Amino acid sequence: MTYRLLMAACTLACALTLGGCASQHIDSYADEKPALDVQQYFNGTLDAYGVFTDRSGAVVKRFTVVMVCHWEGDEGTLDEDFSYSDGSKQKRVWHLHKLADGRFTGHAADVVGTALGESRGNTLHWNYTLNLPVDGMVLEMQFDDWMYRLSDRVMLNKASMSKFGVRLGEVTLSFFKR
Image 1 (spheres, rainbow, N blue to C red):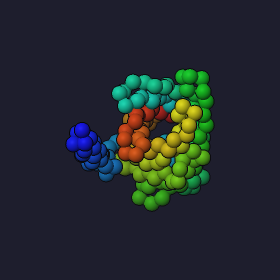
Image 2: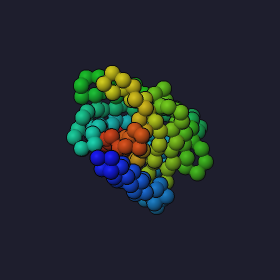
Image 3: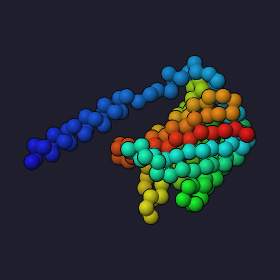
Image 4: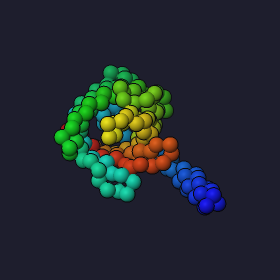
């Protein structure tokens, strides 16, 4: 029995290690069009529609978001109002700071520490830890968040959510600039 447990642990460790090697890199999007100017796209009002799916791909929750965004120099505010399919509401206000070379930092009340972002071509990539309410508890979940600009008005977003390196689900979201 101990041998089986050891083999299962080794198999899981190998799968997690190999899964980490398969991740995409922001530089591979450098030539993709239309180019994403984060300050221009996230300025004004945007509507978003999304789903949260669990590990099996089943939709757990649907939601809409209205985002009111503005920038003053290198400082941006993204004021998000979420409405979920179960009737619940949530608000998140991001405070972004543009750095050199397409990099950004971000803070919000439910973000642990500092979110780190980077933009190339038509793509924006964020990494952050979010305090997420789940079944009456608040869990720190890591997000690997990829946004792809498709046109002047449309951007798609896919975020993988994990805890202790184990993927728990995904958020898929489409943004529409008014």
